Image (cartoon, rainbow, N blue to C red; front, side, top):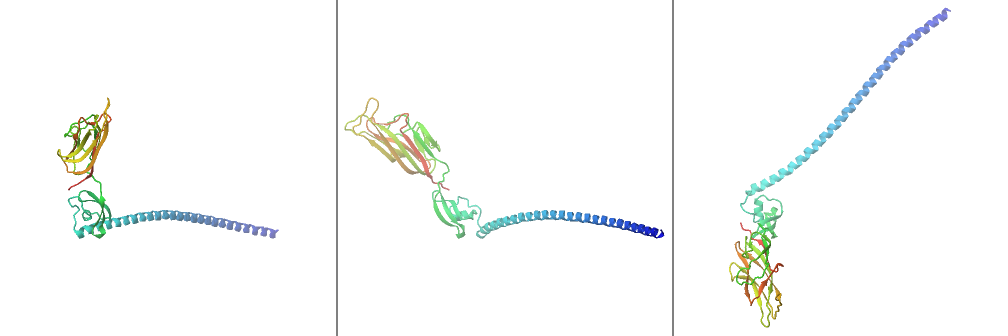
Length: 300
């Protein structure tokens, strides 16, 4: 009995010791769990820090690329300015020549530095020229550039017969009149600019009945004074016929190209005719006088 009691007491002591060990182990496990949580939180903080660092690095790289591009553009602009400055300094050129440029050298003086096709004043007008500024501004003239300070052209017509000789032929209708140069009432064109002009006239002549007589009508284009004829048109017919409504008709035409000074006057006249021959017209507008400025001579 005593032995059993002693054995039981020993077992109780062992059980108490085991409980103490279990409690101690529980405390150790809780400590390990806390350490694990702390480690996890620290790792997450490190990951967040790495992400923020990556973003900051990307922003820095982008800013660096922008700065690099701006620096390259600045270098190019500085080089261009330096080139222009060197040219102006070495040759001691002004930025103005006080007139229209007449050569590649003039263009270079007003700071044209790129090779290519440019416009320059030629002998009588603006011309296109190829400039090589790397070879002391050498010229290679290409051709005429059709430059006008303002357009000049007209087209006028009659609406009735006309048979007076040695007087300017007047007109009734203006189809176009640009440049304020053609006077319908007087029939006189006054050149507003010096240059090369082109004129053309088309008309219809009406004859009476004839046998062996040859009726005719001549129209001339005159410059500045009667008798100074610069173009002539003549039409004639033999054995013409006429009925109760009309006489026989034939076309008449002239054209010319002429250089005019500013203020020169040009007009048409019937300078010769036979019998009652007339320049015919009606509302169909058979007579038309047209002219225009082909090439203006631009002077400085």
